[in-house]
Length: 204
Figure 1 (cartoon, one colour):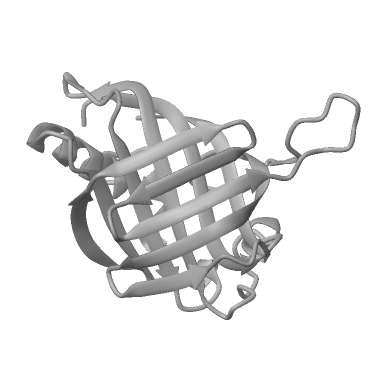
Figure 2: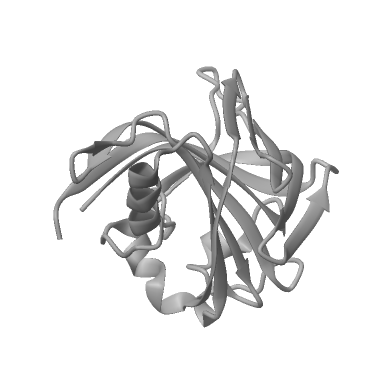
């Protein structure tokens, strides 16, 4: 297995009420809706695999767990930016499924189904405290940071958490969270649902 590395920005929304109990229970709590639906969006700002540059490529991992995530049987689907070349897409598939090692490899034992790969135009826009991501008609999600009342402000963060993207997550509320892919459907714009964002750096 050859080495690879990617880094950039991440954000996600899920169908849990804020704050998602999965994170604070080491993935053992029952999600607030009984099941877990989450879209993990990644925008690569630098990186490569097997000599193929992945700079500028975005992808989304869509997850559905029928109960607590630690119980497994998770369905996983992957959406890759349609601007990615065939080589870039193959590299992202290897990284996002854990086939190339790295953080997603640890999720492997919990995955019951790999639902497939779709390509859509992905937008990933950060503006102040708000991050918005779309993937064609499949994903439309937006989060707003939950900021601290301390004098230095900035987003409240939770650290030392068992999350495949990174161990420190900024807290956010989902302004909107819409999924319609791989048989996973969700649509909420109440502002009461969970979100996270953070920089990330993966390698293997």
